Length: 477
Image 1 (cartoon, helix red, strand yellow):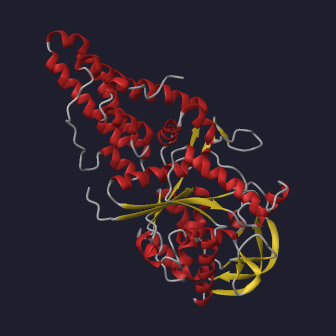
Image 2 (spheres, one colour; image 1 turned 90 degrees about the vertical axis):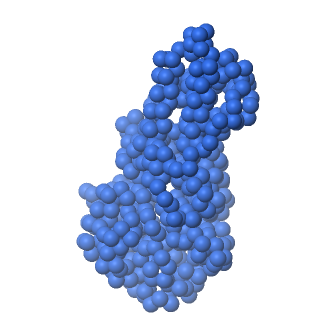
Image 3 (cartoon, one colour; image 1 turned 30 degrees about the vertical axis):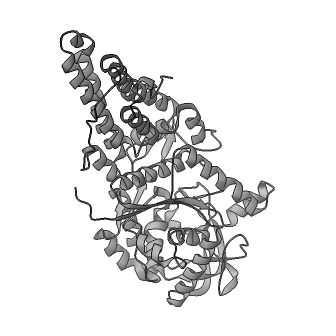
């Protein structure tokens, strides 16, 4: 597979800091980290962005409930996200916060450009306002009178706002999406967006009066830009929009934007229209993954089943959590997770599978080859089927292909019985063990974007000459 792409810019949504991180937000960010690592492996210049969304009336209310000032509150929650990603081995090139001055300055420039484009106007709006989304929604989007995402009844509000002429971009968006110039995946999400557009796009309010915790419109200080408008612009502000034009031009447009399926309307309708209005290119691809249930139940505070990823990392390690989330549920589909399922994967795939192969191989190299192996291995130049699957966001399939090799190697050892073969043909045992070591190094290479710590342990043991000091990769729990 040839790649003419020299740069790769990948983003996650920036996470709203009204609550701490959970396993769902971790899922998106792990997937982005895997893609960033893989593209670096391919020699591309990569920029991986994640961060936190910190403005809006909902944040101000949450801070007041916590008895804290908004800035103090967002500092605390944002730090929890940063720590959780660090614990999971996630290494972004930038962790952006929308309270950063560079973001605020970029948003102000963007707003002025939007006004100069002639695509905004002042008017009065009455409509249904969803507090959860911090945005107006159509009555047709409600299910049994409530927002399908937040399960709350919207408020009927009448406000003086500034509006964006979204209605003018209906044909443009349909054409871009249908032709895949703006690629929305999986296909079901693409069809969902097209169906929404075909219902007819209306102009949308981009500001609110009397919201103090936010960014004021440069020309109307009584109005604050909607939190979701300025949040969307983080993807540009993070790479230097308005401040470092060279870096911005190098990485924009984004190559892949990952997110949960609940926010595709903002990213696949409003966001490309806003960018087009100010003369910027639209992202190349949006991929919206599915949602998790936990042991068959939707995650919620009331049920007490919201999973803190730090808890799983403490019990099983970061690599095991990364592997489990990407292996258990095909990316793009809804799926169910639980600690019981994590434990099964840990003991089966990791301890009995890869861990067993590594221990058997290194123990036999120590016993039959005195811990010495030759400099015999060369990294493959082309993507394997497993790496190809990861490249195309089919993480579960890529991991299945790697574990087929793990299972094959363990079966080979069982059939060859090197502990018996050594008595009659030590040369064949050496050949077998060198081949197993080469296979393990190849597995480590393929696995390193998903399980970087484990891959590094395999490489350092086999390449570093310290096989006699090899420790088990995973111990059954």
